[in-house]
Image (cartoon, rainbow, N blue to C red; front, side, top):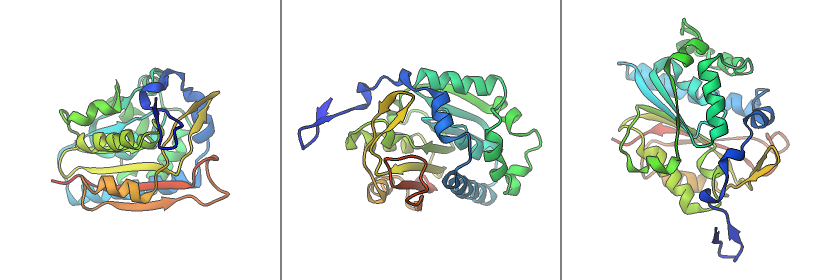
Length: 258
């Protein structure tokens, strides 16, 4: 741990035992039902990716979902255009869950999320269906977000949902996490990244996990270093949030600079 300016302990990413995350509890808290904010976010990401590939048709792309966790819907937003999707995740328990989805069949609660995506014809046209396509293209890879910072591998499309701000109390580590994600993308790659606004931390099972308090200014300030066309959208209203301890969700869509 390091000390904040106030002198209180600051929990870093390396201080957390990520094997303690309970994916079943996380899903129960967040994804068994389709929250209106998730519906709105999915719709925006869906249309962003669809618009990109309609304007830039070509061969199938390689995709990455950074910090996938037990959340399948970011990968689903990339499904129609990818020949492979890397689900990059650190937590061993989350990796096990992702592998169960790839090797078996998608849990039924993801059907509601896919139905929203299918409101766009590009998704509805996927003849083999989301479960079979996911099994075919998904690759689960265990790894640390900060290992991507070197930019030795690049992907054609990427997502990062509720990750960089939800793994540390350090702003510098938050900045490094966002930079790592952006450095993993090829020039011109479309991306979607979502952030919990002004998060105070969160609980999964009986364990508490850290977060950094960031808003639109901090998110845009970092992303503008890597993308010139970043579009930020705020979701969430007081009294209708997923949980306590944050003020809304920030969605950033854009393209990696050439």
